[in-house]
Image 1: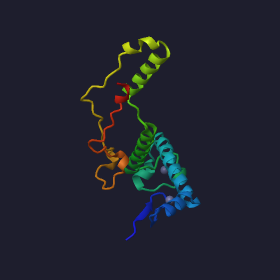
Image 2 (image 1 turned 90 degrees about the vertical axis):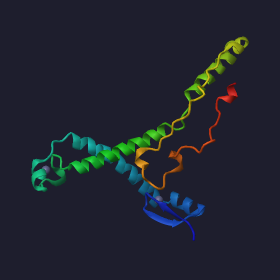
Image 3 (image 1 turned 45 degrees about the vertical axis):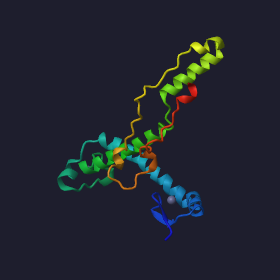
Length: 175
Ligand SMILES: [Zn+2]
Ligand SMILES: [Zn+2]
């Protein structure tokens, strides 16, 4: 009853163990699939921008066909297709934003760090008089599961709220 690892990029699964995974992630096929996936995402936003700039093809809208096919200078996008494309671009952007925002630093920590540095560096004798910024006690980080994961059974642990009691008291080292 071995577990199976499913690779979303390659759409294949194999017996899950460290060796298999490592070998797969290093394999040319996987690298290519992964690259293709990200290329397709980039294409989605490019296509969307192009299609939004076009007028809709009247012939295609009326008959469902157009002799110019892909080379038509008018848009052949149906509202549904356009919507799906928009969703895809939005999800892509959301994922990129999440990557960008990690690791997230508490602004209070940044201020305290700066104050401590200044206290040490410039006027050591006045360090005692430096007032540290204290966090409001009731402040609790707000964790929300991204909408795209709503209703999914297998939510990646990284997007789930931390378990209760897992709060790190980051302010304590400054006190
Ligand atoms: Zn793969
Ligand atoms: Zn057309």
